Length: 272
Image (cartoon, rainbow, N blue to C red; front, top):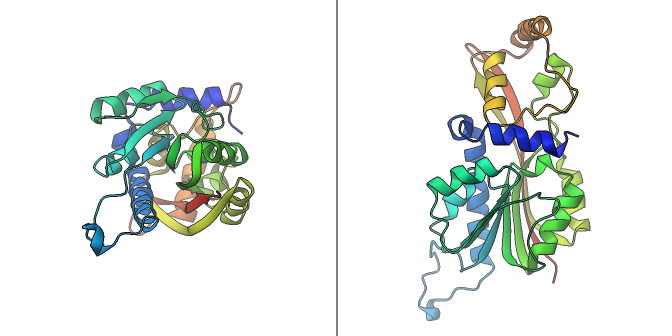
């Protein structure tokens, strides 16, 4: 597993370029926001007698933790839902970017590790996280989500599964850049952490890039290619060979190359 210091450094460096390259991450954040809104509304009985339309767009008022909030993509989707949003991220420059673009009224931003959240027990009605938990040990981060949630609180997240970037690993001969947990294992850990799963879904998404170098640049500009201490990136000669191999084996339709991302979405409720 990549050291925390390397993760923090990599995402801190990418803070100013992240939004321009993070199309997949924004798409996933939109799905997480939609799931949170859907299941939060379903949890509160709404009747005609109450004077509120059954298809009311806003969620019940809640205190929400955006875990691994980054530049604020997930929170931006939720800012009009009536939540009091708190954000936590390991990289301070990411939080500074989100503070510039989002009106964090009623909440706050804090630097912190998702494996040791800087919040008291039972602080939140919901915890949401989009494509951040793969940089953690899920046993620890799931347990922390349960700790800071109130009984019955929602935990809604996306993470990346083992098929993610398999083409890149095949061609460069490198290990996974993050902790890619499969659906079955994720569900097992969720249950063991004190949750009841109420929704789960797996999606394979293919993205196309002009060249392998463009893929590597994208990963670097979103902070998703941290280098551990004492570890070097691929040499120019091996990269050139990998480019030819990648194009031959994983060329996209028409031109360029493709990369696979295995997206896992889970909604869970903390047991009372």
